[in-house]
Length: 282
Ligand code: AMP
Picture 1 (tube, rainbow, N blue to C red):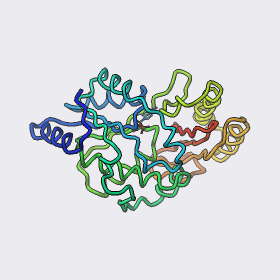
Picture 2 (tube, helix red, strand yellow; picture 1 turned 90 degrees about the vertical axis):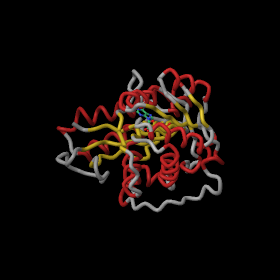
Picture 3 (cartoon, helix red, strand yellow; picture 1 turned 180 degrees about the vertical axis):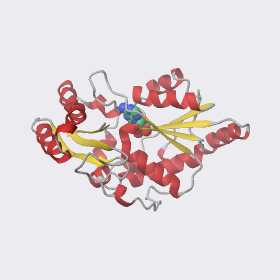
Picture 4 (spheres, rainbow, N blue to C red; picture 1 turned 30 degrees about the vertical axis):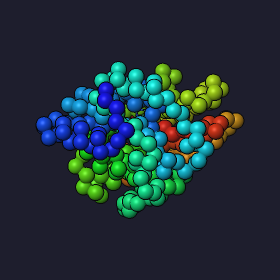
């Protein structure tokens, strides 16, 4: 695996491959890699001639400075995992490489309701930072395919909207959520959970499963109210939102007959750690 720190060098390498008619798949990450990231890598390998990943903890997408400071870093292990997964090149830039002049938000993308609901409502500035860094990374890597996890479902919709807005010639591919054997959605932040917090966090995926099992017998709002209270009754859990939404628009809904389909999204603090998860309602 080739390692790049310089944006011009990786850009030339990727452009060289594309000039030879090879396709490039791209898996951007913030490191502290786990099997969720690896599943994106495997899908990228299956679809592209070459796979590029990036490890960059992007300061502009953290609305909480403590979350940024404490974000787990494990570059040596990450590089070993990427090499094992057959990654061809990794881009590990310094903050000054990505933001040589300023970290001020510089994109104006009309996101409509996407900019107002769920994560956007609870993490002001988060998606501005995400769009800013993904735009820069797409300019640098210029991939044919971009692989994003469904775990960050709203992020997937936001990036797709940004890609459409700038007419970026990349196919955005959504990859399923990978879970621990106990149901917890894999996340780099899980490393920061104590044993007690980890077992508390299992309530999130449990609740999503309950929605999937009980939806026929209840309205969305009945389940929302019940399970919001259920989660908050746990001394370590503080729910930010638990919402049933239309999977296309993310508008809250109170009927299951929705096109294309309904999904349930949750964000909660478990101790100090903020976790998100979601599930489709069948
Ligand atoms: P992150 O390093 O958290 O910024 O995530 C990098 C990419 O991996 C994003 O596209 C995430 O949606 C994706 N990802 C993170 N966790 C998971 C997971 N448990 N399952 C699938 N994809 C994931």
